[in-house]
Image (cartoon, rainbow, N blue to C red; front, side, top):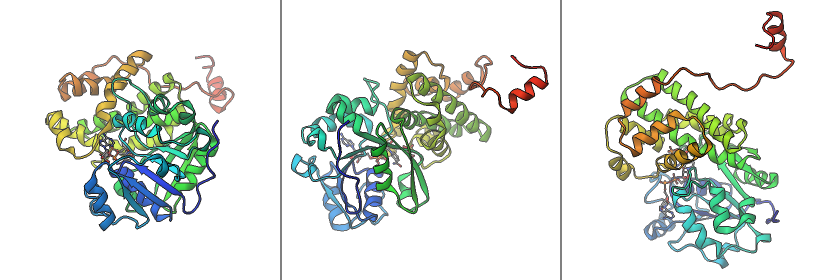
Length: 371
Ligand SMILES: NC(=O)c1ccc[n+]([C@@H]2O[C@H](COP(=O)([O-])OP(=O)(O)OC[C@H]3O[C@@H](n4cnc5c(N)ncnc54)[C@H](O)[C@@H]3O)[C@@H](O)[C@H]2O)c1
Ligand SMILES: O=P(O)(O)OC[C@H](O)CO
C-alpha cells in the first residue's frame, strides 16, 4: 500500500477538480475550515469571475464563496502545482473522469508520495460499465486506485453551502485514508461515517440515481405517496441485490450512501435525477429535458451501464429495467408502471434469521421450528 502524505490538518492545500455544484460547494466547505483551496474549472470565464467576486458564474449563483478558495484553470494544473497539494478531490462527472485522469496521471507524484485522493462522483461509465475504481486503475494504476477514498451520501450541494446538518459515508480500502478524509471534512454541521466498502459505496451512489428517476416519473404521472414508497423500498431491495451480487456488503445499502441518498433523491425536486423522471412522467421528451436541465443527471447514463451489469450478474431488477426501457427504447412511462404492477407475485427480500434468538424460541413454542 503506498504511503501518503501526513494527515491533512489545518491549512492543508486542497485542489478540487470540477467547479460544478458539488466541487464548488466542497471548495467552500473546506475553505471555511481554513484550508487553502484551489478550485479547477475548465471554463476561463468561471475562473476569472470567481477570483474577482468569489461567485460561481454557472452554479450556486447566489452563494458568496469562502475567500480561502482560489479558482484555477482552464488548463489542468501541471505537475509542479499538483506536487504541492496535500489533497486532490475529484468532482468531475463520471463520463468525463477517464479523459481528465489520463491527462492528470502524467503529473501525479511518485506513488509513494501520493496526496490524499478523494472521489465524489456517483455514476457508472457508459460503454465500459466501469466503476470509478476501475477508471482510476485503468488510467493511473492499481496503487493509485487502492489509495483512493470515496465520499457518497445524502448531500445536496445547495444545502451544504447553507450549512444544513449533513452526514455522508466515506470509504477506502485503508482505514487511515478514510479517517483522514473524515477529519478533513468534519465541521459542526457536517459529519462523516467511515467504512471499508468502497465498491459498495460507489455502487449505492450510482444506483440510487436510477430509482430517483423512477420516483420522479411516478410523481410526474400523478401517482401519490404509496407508489413512491413502493419504488423507494423495492428500489432499495434491487440496489442491495445488485450490490451483493457484485460483491459489496449488503449493510452498505442500509447506510447513508444507500437508503440515505435513495430517500433524499426519490423525495425531492432538488434532485436532478428525480427532475428528469418527473418531466418524463409529464410527457416531455428526454433530449429536451437533458438539454435544458443545466446540470448533470448521472442516472441517465448510469442506467445504460447498469442494464448490462444486471444482465451479466443475472440479477432480477425490474424497476431498473423499466427505467432503461423508458430512457432508451421509447417505452411509455405509464406502460412501465403497469408492467411492474403486473409482475408475478414474488417473495420479499429476506436475510437468514439469526439462530438462537427470541424469534427461534417463539417458533419452537408455536411448533413451527424448521418452517
Ligand atoms: N450536486 C450535488 O448535490 C452532488 C452531491 C453529491 C455528489 N454529486 C456528484 O458529483 C459529480 C459532479 O456533479 P455536479 O453536481 O458538480 O455537476 P454539475 O452539473 O453541477 O457540474 C458539471 C461539472 O462538470 C464539468 N464538466 C463538463 N464537461 C467536462 C469535461 N469534459 N471534463 C471535465 N469536467 C467537465 C462542468 O464544467 C461542471 O464543472 C456527479 O457525479 C454528481 O453525481 C453531486
Ligand atoms: O441532483 P442529483 O439527483 O444528482 O442528486 C445529488 C446528490 O447525489 C444528492 O446526494
